[in-house]
Length: 116
Image 1: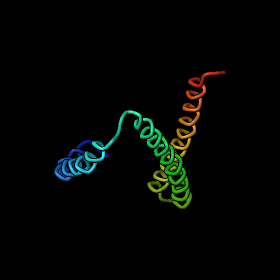
Image 2 (image 1 turned 30 degrees about the vertical axis):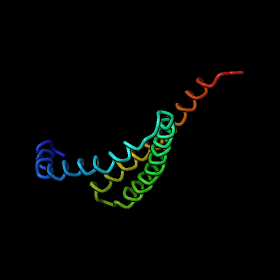
Image 3 (image 1 turned 90 degrees about the horizontal axis):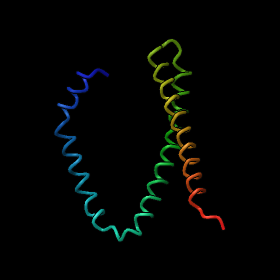
Image 4 (image 1 turned 45 degrees about the vertical axis):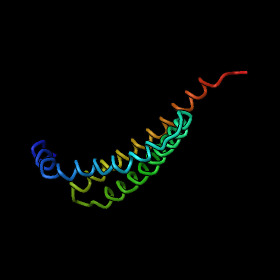
């Protein structure tokens, strides 16, 4: 995607992007104001961590499978084969990153846990 095309798209949709961000802030602001003491911060971070892991795992596997389907059914269409290959690469990298994050957090928890 060229830079000029990106700039044109941003100019064309700038109003809707700003409006979307403002609506998002309007919806999230009351929820953020209701958050409790800092003890709830740990629960929020745990939920965020779980959500990130789920997205990495399942989106990666779906992208991997969809990329394989697109790539192997491309026949002589090189654009479709390239798109399938990039989907597969993205899915594999998300899956590898999922395992990497899981291992990294497990090592940090092991380091942080005091030995009796």
